[in-house]
Length: 562
Image 1 (spheres, rainbow, N blue to C red):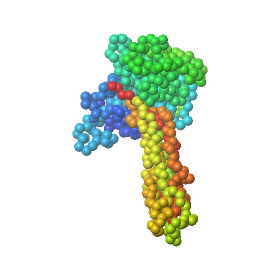
Image 2: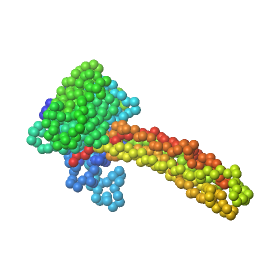
Image 3: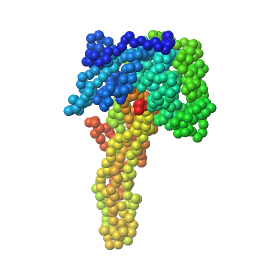
Image 4: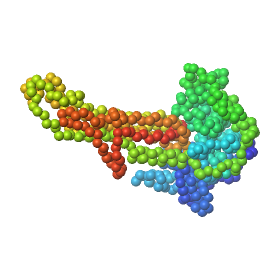
């Protein structure tokens, strides 16, 4: 693959600007979703060509066409490269569509939608990585990384910053070709140091470099190279290396791995706006080589240069392509020799995980034991002879009255994500008080109603408390394959988040109220089985709890541009 040089732009093939309706395409299925709208796999009716439709909704725009879409279209018009996604044309819808969920009476206010038509890609890198048992070979990783760096170098020499490099924005087809996608946050830049300040609220948090976290508005293509380093380590390590939940934690994780920034390893770092805010009390030493000591030495050397704190000394894409890593055995394989996979997009992978989680919850509802206490069975009173004054009645248990100990509800809370998850919620099946008559309690010293001079107290009545069962914990997220963050949480996070701790259980059978109790004045509590109606099926309730495994969660952290 030849490396592009500055100025080589192909403007011969320009997309058609809204001259056709979206009706010329037949939508097959949704493959992505984000704040911008949805991404669909579609087929052109006339030719049968499969494409990707990226929807740009207009109904929430008060100032006309979204600025992010304008930038993306403008940049993609001029970037024509084998490793950059191709924008084919732009089509429009004249009114609301069935998926827009327009309320009655608001159809006239709907401005319609604009669709960006892209070449269809079978996978994104996150979707492939999340496949069960997926592990990339070294030649495969080298092939993907070489294509990523080649496409990114082409962007940089043509003065375009991508500003959102992450796995879900790296698309791969079944021919093994990798392409950069989602240029919604991309921006042209100038080498002029006095140029216009740029926003630092870009790049998904797990892949955001330290200079942006500390508030830099004068940055270079080095911001993209930090993201590439995170992707590189993720491919080799099998999981994200810096999964922070918020900006403070993200910076802390960077310091733990790469060391604390100071004037020694990063000149003028103290001049950044948020340097003092993030400055830690105790400095961290750089540990990249220790943490990833199992990496190949050439891979580790390249990773060290990509994850350099000082952006001025961070390796560029061109130099990375010349690194020894790509020129030593095992060599990068040819894209055409890569394995063929079933279509794998992050959106679809997340959807499958969500369906599996829902199935587990439904199964748990059917199998979950309702912690209802056994009813109190009232037996016929024991016939007793009248007591004589001053005498004791033998044979009676004078123990304390039986009390119902309620099992407390417990809630299981998970962490929240930046750019990134949310609190877990429990579902209480509810409780009900035990049935049966009141407990009778005899005590010394009170007058006996059956005699003039009492020894035993009058029988008291105690109302037992309600029983409740412990709650079952369940979980509530990353960006779409062709761009934009995924709606809802990891995103996700796509990436594996921490496991949810198990929900507490109630007392087991021996400690459950309603167990065998000694008789007192003709009243007996007996444990009896109950049949509880759950979704139309009868399940025999017992006193033991059931706790299904919590599925992995992955929070989705997408930062929008200010």
